[in-house]
Length: 358
Image (cartoon, rainbow, N blue to C red; front, side, top):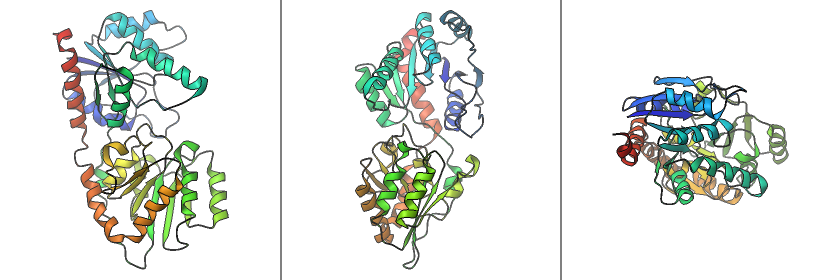
């Protein structure tokens, strides 16, 4: 099978999976954009044959269709953001070429009003050309299945190598006189729910715990002001360089991720690999793949400071339980390997298109 995959831009969350897929099939990767200017991870490229989609003000459906045809692919997977004009054009072009097309992506974020209506229309504009969907995680696949009806859907999450996190020492059982050290990594934006986490911390004991927050964004001043007002042991750090982010997890006891919405949430499998129990919300899509409630952490509603408070108190008040969760946390990501996802993706496509390409 000659497979073409259009992805949004070079990302470390995709390299391992793309490399693993290239071991199974003849793969051509096409980047819709040369890089993501909103990210600091540079331009990590797969070892598979890759190119950037030609695009300028003169591009049209005809020129895109001609370029895609020249790639000689049997099947295409479209994994770039559905609100992009380039994604819409590629979907139409592949359809006009008469080639099987599958969509790969995070679930659409629930929205209301005119903006939500427009985004739904754009998603449907892509999905109508697709034979099925490859969702990034079990919850993504479940949500897409509800959208596409009888067409097939499968779960293939993002992957990053977890070796550096697995190499960290498993957190030791906390001594009675030592503080519980919580940590989180997130952009300082409303969607990440850090304001909810800080409000939850109001109910914690005045001593015996700390929270370190690594990130940056437009809400930094507002969050810092609230921390100062409450007088709680919360430290707002600037971001750690991407290649060194394991440093944030070292010598911590629990990871808290209070997000209002994350289409995946790579920090969750990273934290589990570091041996940290995870407290997070149902709006973190990766939590549905890894967090068994009460076994490796706790998963609850978003925008609920009481849920966060109750869960953090369990960690503080039960050092034996949280220590036992550390090894369980690592076990939760034992099968999180890119070759597993690559095989699942290849088998899914082969099962639903083999009669068309043989």
